[in-house]
Image (cartoon, rainbow, N blue to C red; front, side):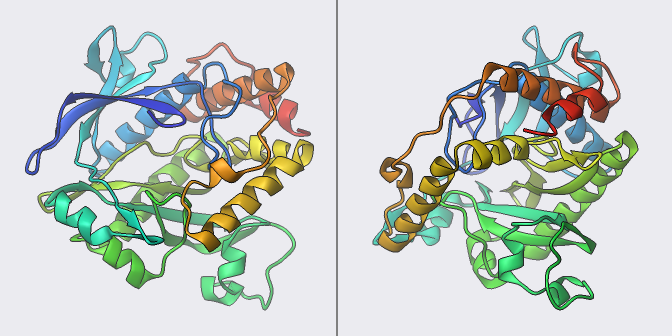
Length: 339
C-alpha cells in the first residue's frame, strides 16, 4: 500500500521475468510527502485510474513502452473503451524492487543493484518541466539563463520555458532530493540516462499535446521507469492530477489546490513539516514525520466536495467523455479558485 493506492501481486517477478499485478486506486491523497492525509476525496481514485489508463493507451499508440496491461472491470482485464463505468483497478507488469539499505546516514545503491540484476525498478524519478512557477525549487538551483531564458533574475510570476527541462531526483529515500547528472547516473545502474531523458520528453510531448487539445496547460510532471533485460519501460502511473501539474484558465487542477489551501489555512503545519525535514537532513534520521510537531487538520466538507468535483470534471474534460456526473470543468474550476 502507498499513501494513495494499494498494490496487489498476482505473479511475482523473478530475476529474469516480469510479474503481473494491479494498482487499486483509493480516494486517499498526500501532500508535502506527509503520507495519507486525514480526509478522503470521493471518486478521486476512479479519476486517477481512468486518466492514467487513458494516458497509457495514448503512449502505446505513440510507441512509448510501458508496463500497462489494461484496466480491470468485473475481474476482467480490458481496454478503457470497453468499460461501462469508471474503473478503479489497473493491470500492470511487475519488476523487482530490492531493499535500499540505509546506514550511517547514507543509502547503499550498490547493494540495491547487486540484488536487482537485470530486472528492477530504477530508483529515480525523472522530472520534466514546461513552466517554472513561483516558489519552484528550480529557481534556487539555477539561473534563468541556464534554462534558455533571456533574463538575469527570475520574474515574480510563473514563466514558460522555451524547451522542456528534464531533471532527476531520488525515489526511495525518505526525502526527495534533486541529483546531479553524475549522481543520477550512479543510481540508475545499467540504464543510460539519455534513454531516460528521451522517454521523459516523449511522455511530456504526448501529454502536453493532449492537454492542449482539452484546454489545459501541462506545466510539469514525472515518470518512473523499470529496466528489464535491456529494455526500459515507463512504470507507475503517468499524467494524472496527482502525478503532474495541470492548470485550466490559470487555475491549478491538481493537488496544488490542496497544498495552497494548507499553506493559507494551516501554515503552522506546513512550517513544521519543513522544519522536521530540515532536521532530518542534519541528523541523518530518515523518519522525519515522527519528529513533526504538528498534525494536519481535516478539510471542511464543502472543500472535500469541491475537490471531488474538480478531479471528476477535470478527468471528463481531459479524456473528452462524461465518465462522471460532475459539473462542467469551468464551474468546478471557479469553485476552487479562491481556496
